[in-house]
Length: 127
Image: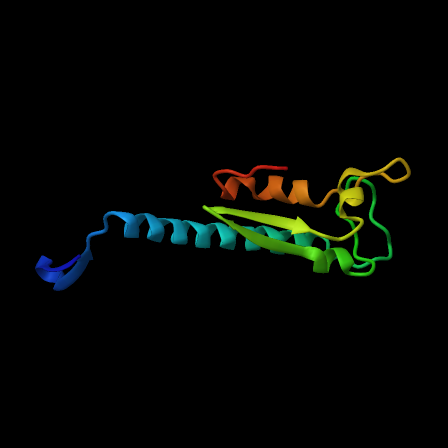
């Protein structure tokens, strides 16, 4: 329902009153849109952090340098609905870089980027 009201020196203004199911759906859509934008921002920050060309190779516990570009291209976002979005990578060596292995020290890129950006978000869960 919308009403036109006179706003003093401001002229006419349209005020919309929201209630019921339409309000809930609108709030969820705008919340999801904002969450998707934040996820895209995180993905872009991760890509920026791993865009340093190799050689030289990265040092352990620093952001990995780009060799083939596979990791850079695999960073993507996924909208899960209900105000939840995920940033993920399907590169075969992403987990090994993030956590390390018996033969290789870790070169994390997800967690350090999220920790740098954490002040911009109300809730970030690390899975």
